Length: 396
Image (cartoon, rainbow, N blue to C red; front, side):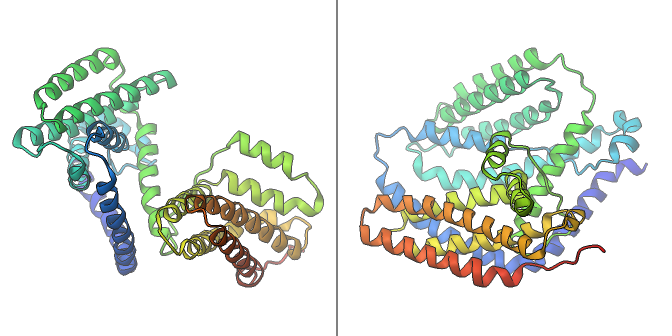
């Protein structure tokens, strides 16, 4: 039957599509990872020297690894149309979803090996033994079961309770593995599986197609967002979130007026547009940590972060619906509004990054960074960016 080979075909098509993208960005990704990896390795070694021997690193590491496990999503490769066409075959798709389990287990296994290889120097005990490895593999399998059972959580209370139990359980299991009490981990693992089945096992076992489709789309979107850093991705589907408090602040800050139409629209679009919003937050956080940790030349790192942020915010101008461009406001107002938004966002980021200099309280360095940042923002907004704002015609 066709459905028996469907998973293999879906997986093959997915990797063919991904390979086309990664063949284009392979060298860029390699050099980026090399640069980031080198910086991380340097500061990680410094961090290992700084951590006192009495610090309870095992419980902290176990908690961080547990948060990593919470991100697990079962890769099913299903699409929206499957909700209609595969629904009659749901009872015959057990082999399909079983392959999804095996595939996700292998991927999670590789990720876990890399993660544990990084955090091993933080663990004081020689936990890499056959018993501990077996318990870790069992933990990965149970975590997949927990991730799969999330589709049957019908209320926010159930989701919160399920996530909290899962986080605490994984943390204590890994903690006892790290301190070489693996038999306690097995007891916790078995008790948790029984308790979770008793607590949530009465839920309907029919496939929640909407949930699985949403999870698959989010996973693919994350991969496309990563690829989009290097090349344009036409398959990228953008997601929005209302963000009531920030939207309210925008409405109170920018009063509605004929001349402020595009400024209001661009600001509200940035606040609700997940890709640009999270990009800005992510780069600001990375820049703050980088500047805080660098012993010198913080202003160079700050300029790099400002440029990366400004350059990747430029496509926001094209995110407006074409029909909105027919609003009777001149292109000059459109251009000016977008540049004002860029100025505001980069200025806020500059102030946040400057706060990282407080760890190195030299007034000369702070003033130099502020001056360099202001000059860069002026250059970027008034010289670099205007040449890259697309013109348009109004409909007659």
